[in-house]
Length: 260
Image 1 (cartoon, one colour):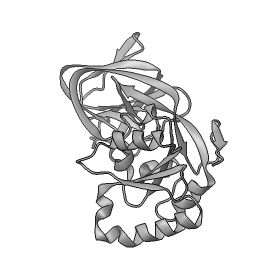
Image 2 (cartoon, rainbow, N blue to C red):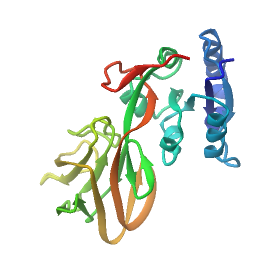
Image 3 (cartoon, rainbow, N blue to C red):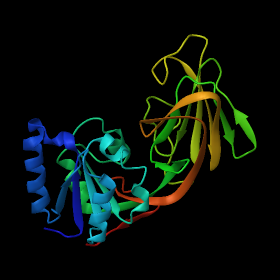
Image 4 (cartoon, helix red, strand yellow):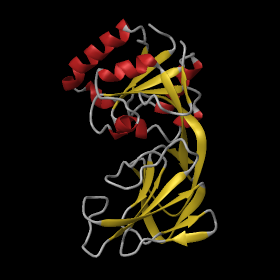
């Protein structure tokens, strides 16, 4: 067992249909010499406590096994824990895996074993971190850009503020995640009609920003890494190079090879 690695399994993996995949995965991790302590995420135990305990015990690389939702529900606190993050996607959705060039299943072990690390920015919505994006669907809310001006979508359009990629669907704007900027995307339906973040025609305006605010006269639903929050005003900001992740991209400017 490698003390530098710890693994957190999402609770949905307890389903018997994942038993074989987990067995194959664990065998390959052992063969590569990177099998480590295993914890299982569950409602009755604090995930944050488990992760902090692993870090305090000397675990340098905490690997999440599950799907994108496994990562997303940790992101509000994860950048404050001094560890490197790994990801082994075993089920859909796996769009974050695609953005990080991590394949589903056994192929992800190759990425983990190579230990090629990149540093990523994280966004903040008020005091909570987000990794991918914040989305305000079908809204008349305004986005204030660095205290200088405000933009508002027309005819019930949408606002997305992206740190990494474009999770919501097809878009002309896919954020870098390492450039120290957020990408604000104002989506407005065209005259031909629309479907929010779908394949129907939409017009996009995009603006780069380091900080701003979402402001609404009525309570608005905001989806941060897929999780809903509600309110009138939300502060936005970017924290550069806050999160270290093992990726398969091999092209990051802030990458390094870890030795364990």
